Amino acid sequence: MAEVILMPRLSDTMTEGVIAAWHKQVGDTVKKGEVLAEIETDKATMELESYKDGILLHIGTKAGGNLQVNDLLAILGTAGEDISGLLNGGASAAPAATPAPAEPKPSEAVPVAAASAPATSAAPAVDPASMEEVVLMPRLSDTMTEGVIASWQKNIGDTVKKGEVLAEIETDKATMELESYKNGKLLYQGAKAGDKILVNDLLCIIGEDGLDIDAIVNAVKNPGAASAAAPVAEAKTEAPATSTAATTAPAAEAAVVNDGRILASPLAKKVAADKGIDLKYVQGSGDNGRIIKNDVDNFKPAAPAPAAKAEAAPTAPAAPAPTAYSKPAETGVVSFDDVPVSQMRKVIAKRLGESLFTAPHFYVTMTIDMDAAIAARTKINENAKSKISFNDLVLKATSLALKQHPKINSSWLGDKIRINHHVNIGVAVAVEEGLLVPVVRFADTKSLSQINAEVKDYAQKAKDKKLQPADWEGSTFTISNLGMFGVDEFTAIINPPDACILAVGGIAQVPVVKNGQVVPGNIMKLTLSCDHRVVDGAAGAAFLLTLKSFLEEPIRMLV
Image (cartoon, rainbow, N blue to C red):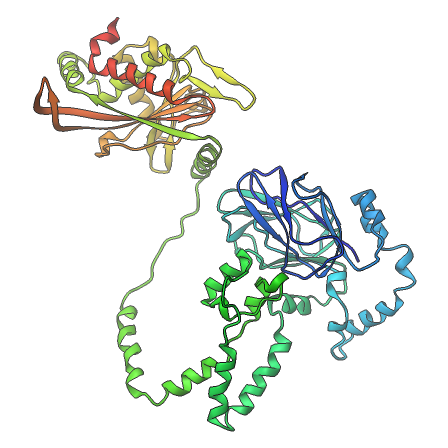
């Protein structure tokens, strides 16, 4: 029965893929694990491996062509099979399997019945690939090696339709939906919600009632187990006969089969590295001897292991050495706490993750001479009821600089850029659970004492968990200050939809050159993170120059 392969979603932001190259042509025989094509996504060029044996009957587009996610990519089946129903529309693919072939297939129905009976080895006589869909953990991003089942949208026994969401899978970059490519019932789940599965491990099985699920699971998890049993048995029977037989066997097994450049799929290379297998000893079964994952899985250097043990047995000094080194490891206690992720932390992870991975950040750092600001603050606080902080000075200076540089006071809204005429500055406040950003509204119109009182009020509300949504909504720019923690400088992630965020370091006394002489000076470093979709480097630098002028000559803020 023909298998329809749709364009997979190979990254979290992928909407279409370009066929960089076809490794198989129409009419070629394809084996499970062989590379069908190289697909260029928005992030990388990746290899697409076949999940089924068959003959390539149709390709959706030539090399260089592009397809939308879930468009028809290829069709695998048997020679001479009628695929016109699949080409006319994906929806007709399922019915096409039932009308005419229903009568010619009684010969296949007999083995199915025999397989369900507890008789003998009738199960291998039936090709399970024609009856069920074995779904392996897909590689949903270019750096993904494993996925976490965030949730199952279908439970065992549920009816599944092609295109319906089976599960939500959390990758190293995002949580993504996995859609079914086949109609049927969900018969098996390879992991529970919250469990991890390696890429290409068994995720689930979709099919019809009556399938021998245990046999299918064993076949997927232990490919070639039956064929490997015979050589192992022979090795065991020959071992006691002669010691020379045991020593010659490893030499044959360890023969180098790949002298020069080793052709292997990326997945095969990773699995081999994980298992410590040298690919030069592995015989490839793919095109031109290309090594695929199954070749690595089936590679069993069984003979060298007993030989090593047989030689190691007579050497008595080798035994106490490992035990001597293992004793210190037993003195420690493995201990940890698993802390559930709070809703605040989930929101922080989601928003800032989206910001960093979607907004092209660039950073501009400038050093500020704070001598005049320190002197001005000392004068102001001599008669002030509430002590003005350096953060208050930075916030006021920033608000005035933003009025002169409206591009920095902008917001990215996807299909448009909003240049804000009002200045609402978000002030990052650290709390035990994470980070909150209350907003000082119309900061450019407020005095230092008003800014001081408002920031203190917000900080107390944040610690008491009394902030309201209106208190943290509507920022046009954000300031994050870690100077009070002794941080010299750092870079901050933009708080969307703002176009920029200012990272403020601490004031440090260092030697500086003034009027040709080295004297003590107080400097502070500011780093502006900019969204390059909105702000260019020159605009970011010009803003920092204006901000520098306000802080180095605070009297300018009164003009």
